[in-house]
Length: 382
Image: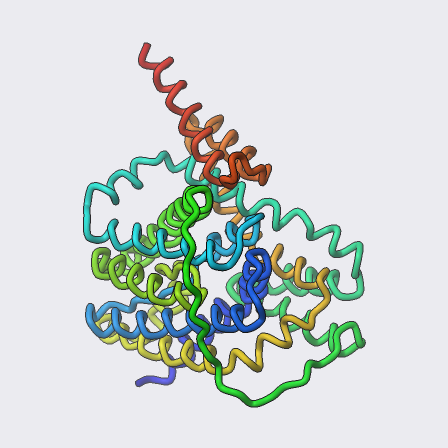
């Protein structure tokens, strides 16, 4: 095991964990998770990512790097009127659909037939409400947020992947250094899993479960497979979908949402510097798995520090973490001339966060975009 394999896995893991752990805790709070359930969510998803990454990398001899669904977290955090048991039911539906996509080709082809502009518009609409509070956070806590923004902007010029992690480190140092946050009482204890019986409510399954599946496939799995292909590997699509779907289904009972292929963090682990022999680069998946298992084990020490941060700082950190995904989604929404208006409608309806019949805005945004796109296609054909 070369040092370069371990170092790249460590950097990729810390970037993925540090840049979105605050968003995960916000999502847990949105569905009414207790502190024990939120800690179980973190531990379960770290186990799922680590064990599945290691298994797929060893089984396929391809460096498979997995992530938790960051757009999925934003979707969950925007939910209203959903309890934790109902969220688990939606997680199970999304996991089952991911497995079905891997096992049954027609479903995968149906998902791929959703126009790119509409899928991207839905993702942009989910992310936009979390980026807008950045300036309000800066106004509420300028001494904390403005230095974070400055560090983020500076580091991003040289290493975009580390920009959010640098902003997090700056926020932590300032919050505890100037007394805006009190260091929590820590105890050395092992993490534990909390079993959560799912509840299945039709409106939650349609409004959260189906959109969670769609954003995970469109914004995580498909780009993740593309990154592998660009690095010269044949993506193990079927094994990856079956394994991540199964792992997501099992971890859902402990409160965790879906895991998926990684794109940005995967690029860190696929560079030539990781290992000069491409055939040996799969071992980075083993190192990556080990780091995520350690992050899961130390969750009881990490989570209290994040939870102790001022709300304005957490909101700013979430906004900074989602600026990159929002830029990519907005670009995709307007990339195709014949899909721009449909993409815009999808974005606007989704960003409204309006729930109708108990079904969330992401579903209605997708439906509205498809309806507008279909009308335009019929007009063009006529």
